[in-house]
Each structure stands twice: as structure tokens, then as C-alpha cells.
Image 1 (cartoon, rainbow, N blue to C red):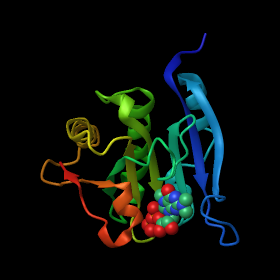
Image 2 (image 1 turned 45 degrees about the horizontal axis):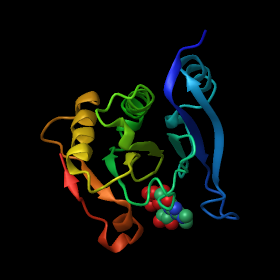
Image 3 (image 1 turned 180 degrees about the vertical axis):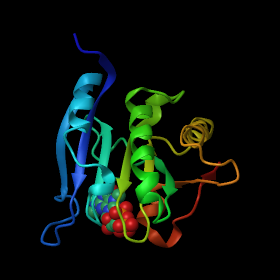
Length: 180
Ligand SMILES: CN(C)c1nc(=O)c2c([nH]1)N([C@@H]1O[C@H](COP(=O)(O)OP(=O)(O)O)[C@@H](O)[C@H]1O)CN2C
């Protein structure tokens, strides 16, 4: 028998198509709820580093759309990891897989707060975001941030920031609500 995961997860793919809206460009690829089905999907699709600029992968709990407006996301925010251009060749794919395994393996203490994760492939530098449901749960949010840095071997002195989606929507105030 296959090894069941605690949650069912859906992988989404965003391809920049100017003739469509942002929302319509978010395509659901597949859902899985066993370890084996995860690996067969992962081995079947392109690595994040092989995607064209402007594309994203998003992995969210089934039923949660990878957008601020979803009921599960709207009171939350994201830990944001900004990568340098040179990290696309040696860190991006490893970071993204590590984060996926943290999510589906429920590695975070309060994994109930985790909604999903997004990897943005961008010329100005790739980004990985881990989205949580409740920005006011400071202890829970900071525990996830600390665990992230630990799992990705990010140096203690390199801080990462948590931004509330409401602020990110209003670009003019995109600021760090927490840092670890
Ligand atoms: C429902 N809805 C429209 C909507 N809902 C959303 O949830 C949502 C958007 N729109 N996003 C749009 O993409 C642009 C680039 O953000 P980026 O994160 O790709 O980053 P870059 O600026 O391309 O680096 C954002 O400025 C925003 O326009 C982003 N986003 C998450």
C-alpha cells in the first residue's frame, strides 16, 4: 500500500500569459496525498530552475488557492526568502524540494497554520515564500521561520522577513512584520 500523507496537497503552475488575468494564469497541475504519488509527480515535471522567467510553482493544501484572497490566506502572510541570481544553479532546487518535504511531512510544530509555499522564478532574483494562515500568531509564525532557516542552513546572521499579505497587496507598505 502507499504511504498516506497527513494532508492532501495541490501543485499549481503560473505561466505569464499577458492575454489572461493573473488569476486565470494560475493552473492546477495535480493533487496527491501519498508519498509515492508525490514523488511520481515531482519526477514527472520540470525543476523550478528549468522554468522560464515570470513563472511560479505553488504547493498548497488541497482547497486553498495560491492567492491572498483565499479565505485561508487573507488573514495571514509569508516568510520570504530572496535568492541571489547565482543561487538559481546551486540552491534554488534544493531549497524548494526541502521546503516541499517540510510541508508534506508536517515538519513544522504548528503545521496547521501552514497554507502552502510559492517559488517565483524572476530575472531580478528568485523568491521562495512560505504562506501561513494567521499573522497574529507570532510564536507560531516565528517558530516556522526559525525552523526554515535551520532546514535550509541559512546563517543565523542572515535575517528573513515575514510580510502580512494585506501589506504586500498594498505595495507601498510592503514591510517585515517579523524577522528571524
Ligand atoms: C487575485 N489577484 C489579482 C492576485 N492575487 C494574488 O494572490 C497575487 C496577485 N494577484 N499577484 C499579482 O502578481 C504581481 C506580481 O507579484 P509576484 O508575487 O509574482 O512578484 P513579482 O513582482 O513578479 O516579483 C502582483 O503585483 C499582483 O499584481 C501576486 N499575488 C500573490
